[in-house]
Each structure stands twice: as structure tokens, then as C-alpha cells.
Amino acid sequence: MTVQGALPPGGWGPGKALPSLVALSLALAACTQPLPHPVPFTDLPGWQSDRVAQSIPAFRESCAVLARLPPDRALGGDGPLARDAGDFAPACTAAAALPPDDERAARAFLTRHFTPWAVGQDTLTGYFEPELRGSPTPTPALSTPLLARPPALVEADLGAFAPDLRGRRTAGLVRDGRLHPFPDRAAIAGGALAGQGLELAWVDPVDAFFLHIQGSGRVAFPDGRVLRLGYAAQNGHAYVAIGRFLIESGAVAREAMSMQAIRDWLRAAPPGEAAALMARNPSYIFFRELAGLAPGKGPLGALGAPLTPGRSIAVDRTRTPLGTPVWIAGRGVERLAVAQDTGGAIRGAARADLFTGWGDAAAEEAGPMRDPARLFVLLPPSAP
Image 1 (cartoon, one colour):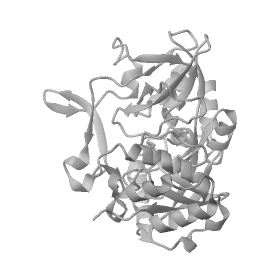
Image 2: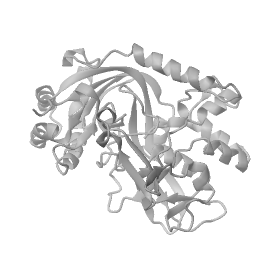
Image 3: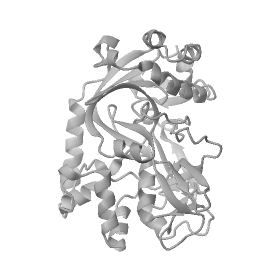
């Protein structure tokens, strides 16, 4: 998932026309993007510079998940980019037979089983798996719970009701035979889900907010236990980037905006002001324990495969199918990655979020990453 606060799309203030202007500018920007179209591998900027064989293990992790899915399970993508799990079967069979770290064999495999599709240019950001201090019970410093998925939360596949909504999902609460909005972040922070035994761990409130942005993490308890948590569900409310409010209010300069700048402001602000700003993002993430996951493995992404540092990306699954390789051509980043995750702020065919790993080094790499990049989605043929 994305370092979403680092991408301020709008502003804060009394102007009522601002949301409309933002929507209009986004619509106009979308119109300038070329339609997805197939291109030869020779058109991929920097294609010869990467060790693409290093991405094959990540693709095999995708294949292990896809093999357990029905062949007609939609993986995402729109129009000519839409793919089902069965479309990847020939490529997955061939990938299993590839010799390890064989660059020539990896390139031959990719050119035989995939066609690159140019999907445009957007922003490449980075995200990581945080390591937090936590407690199994609340303390004055560790006062915010990380919650498991509530039993009452209902997710709906909108594509099952309308073909043009294929790949889109929502969530809510069924009451009186109707689907209603689920409580938002402010309501949940106010105790809307208290008393249900959903608490997995208690952490610092600012750490909890950023864990919702990253989508997974490691929580270290005082007794030495480490709890691995991964994404379980989302409350159905659209993500709102709080960084934009700090920019518009003048609290943080636009050019200085980053995940760290938001964190610093929240730490320095009175607790009530910090809580009010975090509540401006109504989206709320629920977690699940990733039991049995080896310490050297990354967290599970939205596809269900463990993420590989530097080779896994989060994408907009309504535009790009999960599981597929993607060529990234950005400033200082020209490499093959695999679409294995999603994120609340990842919207658009050319938007991507690169997983950098876990620990301090991964955080330092992900934090400032916000550069223009072109994306090329490598797709297998559609099954007849």
C-alpha cells in the first residue's frame, strides 16, 4: 500500500469550489493519458539494464496463489488489460521450470509468454513494512488498538452487479435488508466497535495511523514476541490524504511534504488536533495475524502472496490485474516488478507503489520516493 499522505491532491479551506476543481483537473489529466497499447520489448526504457531474473521468484509467488484460484477468477484490469487466473497458467508452468538466476532464460521466458502494454505515466511512490512497539493491553503510551475484521463487515463485488464495475469492490453494514455505510475512522476511534474483542494489539496512535497507510507491519511486544499483521479488510470509505490539509493550512510547504513531515506534525501537535487531522481520513484498515510467516519473508499483499523487497508493487487493480509483471521506467528506477498489492491512494493505470522491505533502511528508501514513472504492464494472452 502507499505512502498516501505524501501525495497532496487538494487543499484545506472554506472554498466550496475546490473539490470540483480538483475533480476537473484529475479528469483532464486522465484525458491526456494515451490509451493502453501493446509495444515491443525494445520500447521499454532501460529494458537491458535490469537483472530481470531477480523478479522471477516474485512471479512464482504469484503463481502459487493463482494455482489455487478458479481459472475464471477475475484478477482485475480494464478492457484489453483484464485477465483471469487461468490466463497465467501457461506462463506459471514455464516459470516453474526456469533455472535460478539465469538472465538469458528469464528474458526468453518473458518475451515468449508476455506482451508489454504501455499504460502511461504517473507517480511512483514507495512503501514498507513498519516495525512498531506494542502491547497486548492498553497503556498510557500505547493506547490505540489495531483491530481485526468485524464479523458485521460485508464486502460486495460490484462487478457481479454491473459489468462496467468489474474489479471494483465496496464494503458496508447490512441493516434492515440494505447495505449501509460502515462506521468511519472517527466513529471507530470514538468506540463504535468497542466491546467486540477485535483488539489484536495496542500501539501509539500515530504509529497506528501510519500502519493503516502501509497495510502491514511487525508489532514487538515487551516479552519479545513479534506479531506479524497483514491487511484483512477496509471499511469501505474512500481514502483521503491528510497531507493536503497541512499544505493548504500552511503548516507544511508543498515541496517539503512527505510521510515524515506528516508524522513530525502529528507528533508535535496537541493530541486533540492530531486526532482531528487523522480523522479527516475516513478510511480504516482492519488487520489479521500472519501466523507462521517466516521473519525473512515480506508481508502478504492483496493477492495473497508474500511481497518481495524491490520487486513487488501495489497497483490499481481496476486497471492492472494482480499477479502480472510490470516494467517500471522512472528516475533512478528501471526494473521489472510484479503487481501483488493494492493501496487506497493507488488510482490509475500508471500509478504504482514499490515495496522496499522492512526496517529502518526500507523506511528511509520509501519515505522520499515520489517520482514520475512510466509503466508497461506485461500481459499473457487471454484464454479463448
